[in-house]
Each structure stands twice: as C-alpha cells, then as structure tokens.
Amino acid sequence: MRTILTLLLAMVTLGVFAQEQPVVTRRILPEDIEQASIQMVRFSTNSFAVRFSYTEAGAKKALASWEADPKHPAISAEWRTGWLKRRTDKCFFQSESAATEFMKSIKSK
Image 1 (cartoon, rainbow, N blue to C red):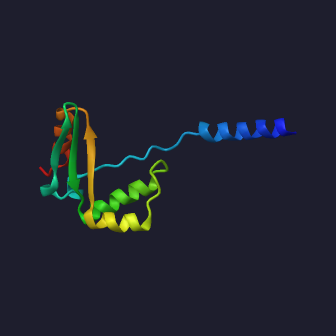
Image 2: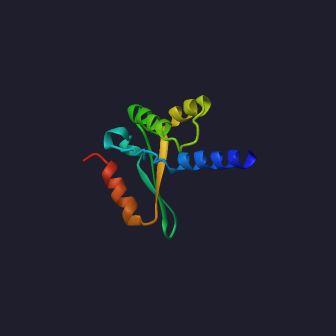
Image 3: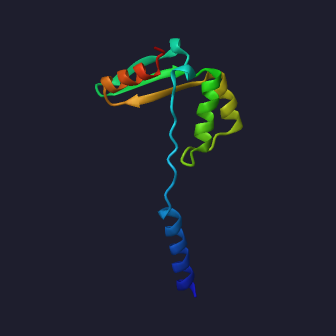
C-alpha cells in the first residue's frame, strides 16, 4: 500500500512539474520611466547595471507584471507600499554595449 501511494505521489509530482509554465515578460517603455533618472553603473569589467525610476503609471505596470509572475517571490503589502514611494529598478548586463543599447531603448526619442 505504501509503495502504491509513493508511486502515485511521484506521478502527480512529475505531472505538475512537466506542465509548461507561462513566461511573464515585461516591456519597459520610455513613457514608463522618469528620463532624468536613467544612469549606467559599472560594477566590474563585465558587470553593468542600468538604474532608473518609474513614473507612477510605469510603477503600477511593473507591480502588475511582478504579481502575475509565479516565479517572483510574494510581494507583501508593506514592501509594495515602500517600493511605490521610491519606484526604482535596475537591469543587469554583462557588457557595456548591451547596457548602452538598453539605455537607448528606454530613453525618449
């Protein structure tokens, strides 16, 4: 009996993990960013980040995207309230050219 239950549990577990999970993507548009806040930071030879602040509307879009992502850690009400006061984010890159291209894509033309 124990063996059968173990096998059933293993089959159900494999079935759950075998299902494709939707990929949540987030598009960051220039109108979602406070343009004066965009800056590149170099951490080491191959480590760059682009930091920026969202507009109020952009911050709401970002939060909705994070909350829809099942892989994103749970967002507590306290964290959400604090983040909405600052509305900052950053994206990491392994080359300066990739970081520069991203900066160009989020800047207003």
